[in-house]
Length: 142
Image 1: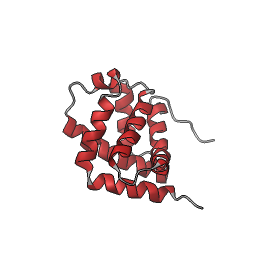
Image 2: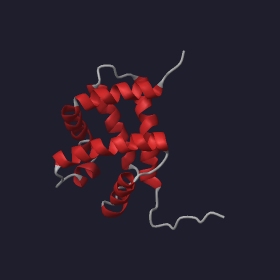
Image 3: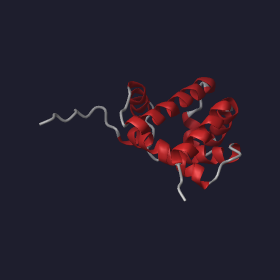
């Protein structure tokens, strides 16, 4: 038996994109209710704009997964989360858990393999966002 996690992710992501308004509404309801810290962080947020940004960010994390190159959008979002919003890195696990919970509620074909596919695909982008230090000078090549 072989599991194609790219195919599992792509099928699920396509379903999400075809039903994105409902999915992102449900995701943010779950995410905001997951923690008082998250609720406070989104207190005065334009949620329509936030949903558009998340949809775009997921696309860029998928690009990062395949290319292993951080484009300007992902770099900017990482800097904003770290420098402007002071996002605690522990909240990224809350984010991915809320995302997986929402997928389980939402995607009729969801199963454990689908959850693993999403985690595998988004992990490089989330790790980048959690740990990148953009103020650190780049190393020079020898």
